[in-house]
Amino acid sequence: MKLESKLSEVGMNLKSSLIRELLKYASVPGSISFGGGVPDPNTFPRHELAEIAKEVIEKEYAYTLQYNTTEGDDELAKQMIKLLERVYGITGLDRSNLLFTTGSQQALDLLARVLLDRDSICFVEFPVYLGAASAFRMTFTKFETIPLLDDGMDVDYLERKLKELDQAGKLKHVKFIYTVPNFHNPAGVTMSLEKRKRLIEIAERYDIPILEDDPYGLLRFEGEHLPSLYKLAGPDRVILLNTFSKILTPGLRIGVIVGHADIVRKATLAKQAADLCSPSLNQRMAARFLERYDLLEYLKPGIELYRKKKDTMIKALEENFSDIKGAKWVNPQGGLFVWFTLPEGYDTMEMFDIAKEKKIYYIPGQAFTIDDSKSSSMRLSFCLPPEEKIIEGVKRLKEVVVEYGKK
Ligand code: PMP
Image (cartoon, rainbow, N blue to C red):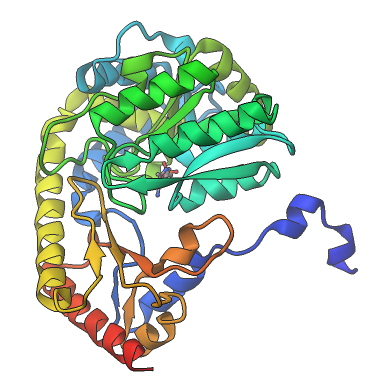
């Protein structure tokens, strides 16, 4: 059988993600990887979860080993509503405002299915979170990219673009503005309060929904917590995506859509078609964990661990790259990523061949573009390697850059 001739348009367009391809190298012995944005397993509450798993399987097996509703676990919903109130100050939520998903990656997919068509336009930040771009792309939507500045997206640019689209009669095609406001993946930047307000004001003026994706908000090392867009503008304007991946464990695969009951209902119907429901066991484990432990207290040592690793990476970058004119890096206030940019002319994808030889891995900026264009930036994640490997890794990176520069 010739598979090519049988593939759908979506099937034909699917290609392997650059990140997945590059991460294969990271398991080579002696290598140091700044590639994967995966949490440090030392932060996982394994003993607590093991105890809870045994208990909920033995005592609640009729629920935990059974199918669930598509909406997800009501006990987890109760805990989530409490958490959202405590952490984000969001009030007035009820069960109809929440849908549990298989990680927030599924939330991105479901929302793309219910909001985007072939002639749609969605706004994303540049550089873009790769997973969102992949999910949205499945619908053949068009993309508009908004450059990211040190304090979040360039809202003036957004405003100009919306005005242009309005004048061209194309505003009706714009379905949403997607943003990662806290400790952006990959850019590391955080949207200032002023910009949050401007973004909402612009979105309201042009009547465009905002998709707020906030996996990292609770991983803040320094500075004040900023109000979420959802808190500032409410469910008529904002759909909030959250996940337990970076604050509990990604292996549970629990994300949540928080939004107006109407959009949550549509996403629920799409989820029914996609996978019927998320695992009952995982959701009930998370619910019992939140019931018994104070999540914010439990997070503190993990945040401290990441803060130290981040400081080590920033110091190593300062020590090694201050002499390279035009090299710059974002010092993030939280999250898992440093965005590192080399002077113009460097192509971090091409440079990757030298990095492979020296067994140091990063994600080239090209992976975070919509059109696969060349980039002089790279994403460095500091979450996994121990501090001494971070220091050694940045030294190797310098060697790579110097060798590439000599070409
Ligand atoms: N959004 C962003 C911005 C992310 O960085 C990630 C994880 N890398 C996700 C969504 C998806 O996370 P998960 O599916 O594990 O909840």
